[in-house]
Image (cartoon, rainbow, N blue to C red; front, side, top):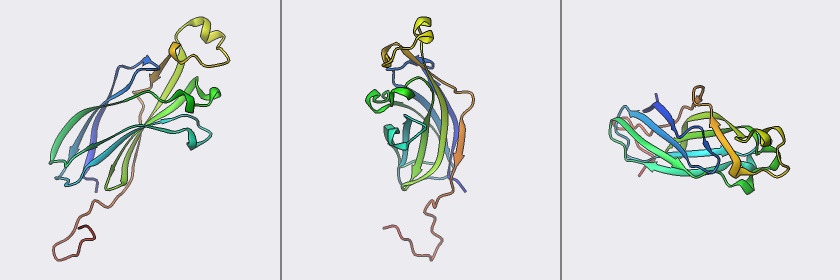
Length: 165
């Protein structure tokens, strides 16, 4: 059974200019104290064709975590445009929010992101080379895809040896 439950994720500053940071307000509940950190990541999927274009925008460690409800704002810089294939600069992609405990990912929240020009002329006739400074990203916040994974939380029953020091 999961010991951490995400109860809410709010996207702040959405839609936003392409070069703005991503900002997520995350609320989660720990059903019991966790002695080690939770590792949160924001990952930008640069291309549907290959994981080599995925970028970890930022990682933050939260912990140790006492039992109860917790909230924090996680902001991460925009993706490195040099790592995004030209043909994937515009249109729909994905941003992932993940959380791990003891190097085991237990939840992933995915959002579709639409990158487009704000200028109607550029929308009609996009330039050959993307002009990121004239783009806006819009995260479809209303329909996140949540995937949960079963992990070992490190429970040790009385009298049982632990593999943790």
